[in-house]
Image 1 (cartoon, rainbow, N blue to C red):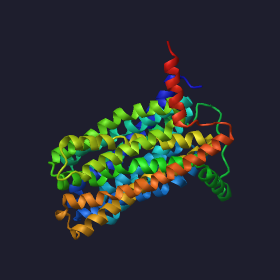
Image 2 (cartoon, one colour; image 1 turned 180 degrees about the vertical axis):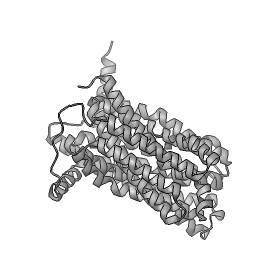
Image 3 (cartoon, helix red, strand yellow; image 1 turned 90 degrees about the vertical axis):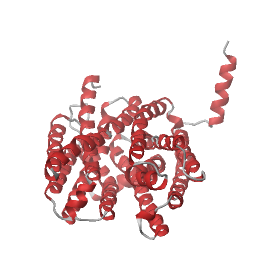
Image 4 (cartoon, rainbow, N blue to C red; image 1 turned 45 degrees about the vertical axis):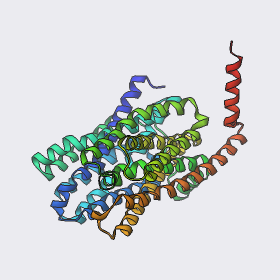
Length: 438
């Protein structure tokens, strides 16, 4: 077993790579106005970069998961950092939309390599009971990359220009890539891991085996159902909804989005501890998070007129649970799959939330355009109310998937001798114990 100091050092290097990945991911968004001037394009064209990034990220998850099981996380983290650095260097020199798109594809590819690889390393270096909390911490600390893009990156952008800002981001990526290559280790064992068969037949067999296990699919549907609402709100439609729909100032909208991040920092460790202490009740926690999201949106959308400030605060607080809730999907992948198949299973799970986010972003945009005739200046609160109802379709699909795969997973557990007692029996037994106490 590794010493705690060594494990924490490995985690710090891995999470540093993820922080920089998030900075790369969000840097183009904070440079949106500068990008519009540099490339002379409309806002809709700039928005397509977000969709492009999500398509690349989600589409690569399963291939990367298969690769992760064969070459390990260290190589992929280092490669991802260098790919993102290359993408930012292309953006620093780009003067056309196709070249900028190529840069974002490189960034999306490197980004896709990073998170699942860091999670794989965390699972190897920390005791199983501590992994749920470490997974939450990794996801939350990584969001500090948004601060790097919003503060120092923007400062360089405004002081020294486009090329200097993206060039400095590229240099940071190279630094992190070298650090990961030198300092990261896939496992605490000094014995090199035996390479697995990389033939097409063996890759396909691993993918099919991971997919067929209902626990993997339970993780996918968990990620699908919990993540998309918060991601869609933060990445694309939250700011327009608050400003154009609810009539809030840009400063107030920014404050609400910031509150989402801060609340997630608090919620993540709490959810991690709950998963750690009650591993057989993880799905109930997932269902509770989905219910909180849906209930908050229902209250906002059904209320006549614009929502009061306190209700919007409750809305963003409920969506702050989305990111930590989606991490439970990775815990399902970890506990239902052997280590040699963990990367593949994690990649499958990670597709869920980003696929749901991509579909929801596109669907909301289509509904808004259909109601407003394609003019964003005409989006009203009623338009947003109808468009945001797309979320209920995604929640319904995800809940069906969760309930079905949970039943199958429990059946598989029962066959292995692990019985999950009904929740009502657990509550009744707890009440009896309390009555029996003197």
